[in-house]
Length: 324
Image: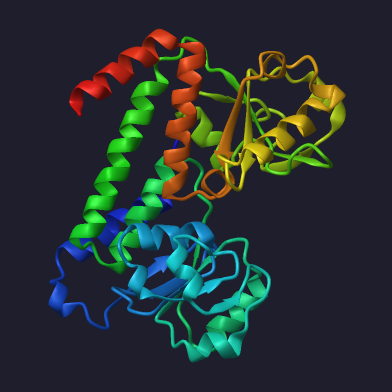
């Protein structure tokens, strides 16, 4: 379920290092870590001025209680709402180097998919740039949270956030065992009006759905994110369709999305369509491998349990009610 190797070793080494260095003595200290590009990077401990070019990592930094450390963002970083007040320095393909330098960042967090030439230009300016992998599942999202907490400083709020994430992940994994057979779930991040793009093997969404007790209907067709052709679309038999929306509570948007889906002749024989088993997800929560993904999947799991294991879902609900 989870990749074990260099990332786990980094976490172990960094955790041990921090455990033996008093907080007051850490000013100006650095630790050398190998990032997702394979490069050894001198990462400052407890950086005070952080720029994040990854929306999911921006959310992680805020989730850990370090929103006040962020001084810049990408144009796609928009949650929590407070980050929209931060200066925009670019995106995955281009960065305004002059504006970035003016922010005087201690640390810049980028994705492995960021333009490598641009990353090197940032490093040529003497900036500390650390590239992060896309997590493979919810377990690796937790590992990334741990790594960021160790770099930024494990304060009380960070510890609470990590404990909360771990407890909710345990709940999700426990509930996943309630399914007699993993229901087939279909997710497209592009809708059905044109090209249909889906998640294959090796993506965080495929791994996270598996942890949830669900089977990604397109997981065995290809690796990574890919365009699904119409012939293969017709061959699928998902039992639930996840429909991502900017606002899942928007009734008009829901109706439009369902109309678009049911207007495709290739899906007419899908059990999910025949029984209208549609789960409406908040798009950014679902398509960003950050802490909010876990909340979305807990909700999806609850919906699926109600459909495929109603007795188990009722027992879980009763137990949760009794604990309140």
